[in-house]
Each structure stands twice: as C-alpha cells, then as structure tokens.
Length: 245
Image (cartoon, rainbow, N blue to C red; front, side, top):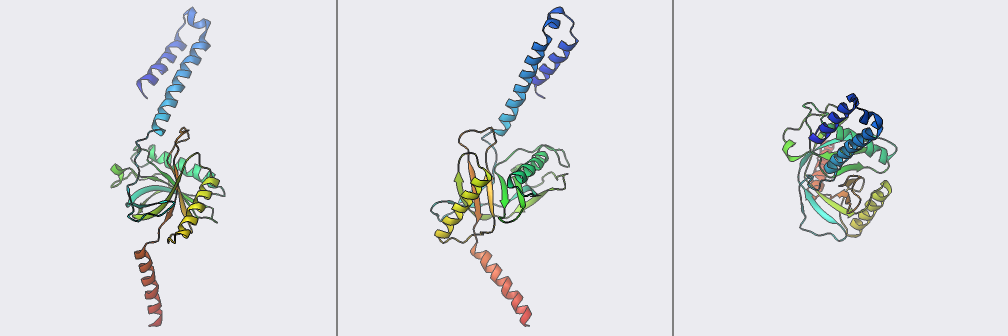
C-alpha cells in the first residue's frame, strides 16, 4: 500500500473513533469523500500499470523478403506462460485464460514473485475446435529461471524461433473482428503464393480496456519453412523405408 492509501486508511480509523460534535453532525459526507479519494488512488494505480507503454514484448526482426499486405517477422525463441481453456465461446475462453495468467504474474507461483506484465497477450485459435491457448510472454529477467506456477492449469512453454505473417488493425477487437482479419490475412497469403500453416492462427492484443485510442491488435499465421518441409519429407521417407525393409 502506498503512502496516500495508508494516510487515507488512518484518517478513516481516526474519524470513526472521534467523538467531536463537528464530525458527528455530518459523518457520512466525510466517509464518502475519503472512500472516493481512496477509490480514485486505486483506480489510477491500476490504470498506470495497464496503460504503460513500456511493456516488454518478445524480440523480433523484420524479414528480408517483403510480402504485400502484411508483415513478415522473425521472432526469437522465448519462454511463455500459457493455459489451455476448453469453451464453446472464444471470448469466455480468453477471459478465463487471462485471469489465470494474471494471477500467476501477481504472485500465484512457488516463490510468490510478482512478474511484470508484457505484451502481446496471445490466443491460439484452431477453427472448428473449442480449445484455446492463452499466453503471456515471460519477461527477459525471468527467462532463465521463471517462477513455477502453482495453478495446475498454467504451464511454461519454450517456443522456438519462427517466421510469422502479421496483419495489424486498430480499435476494440471482437472475436468476429479477429476472425475477419485472420481470413483477410489468409486470403492475402494465398494470393501472394505464400506457404503457411492455415489450420490455426494467433490473435495478439496489446492494450488494456482502459486504452480508448490508438489501440493495436494483430493476427498471426506461421510461415512454413523450407527446412521444416525437408524435415517432414525426410521423416516420411524414413518411415516408408522401414516398412519396405
């Protein structure tokens, strides 16, 4: 609790035990004023945390080859905190997943460590299924030795470096808007002859609900790498060879 909050709590205690006629005349007014100030301080503190523009994000660099209508980024490998939610509603799955991960960074872990918020908050969407994976990027200072979650539904995953196609858009993003933007990105990639994993995509949000203007959202499709294709072909041929022996 900060100094202002401590002062207001002390003032409330003093006032409730004070017996002077002046305070007894209009106690409700002073109580309401003090509670209003206390609520204002708490709300401003929450907004300051959520509206910070200095939140860390995973490292990436622009790819050498430009793709019209979208970005192609090369993300570095990194550790993410994730949870998988089963739900018939993507919106509800995201809400539940965000809450679990927020509790994790607020100290619901083995060392009760508070972890800084990062961006973006991602959600893995697999059209046709009711399973969603919500994830927070683990800050750099915790990458090597992150606090272990105490919630069995939260886990830490090491994501490999990857080339990702990105489409950005503004405003408040609904499930329908994310789906529409993902389809637009897929259409662009198909038109440009790009090879990508079309059976899933990620939504990426960068703002809190308190941000009214200049909001930033993204949808991601993972690029199919040449080496990945060669590995899959080699693995397939290896299996066929064993069957023929």
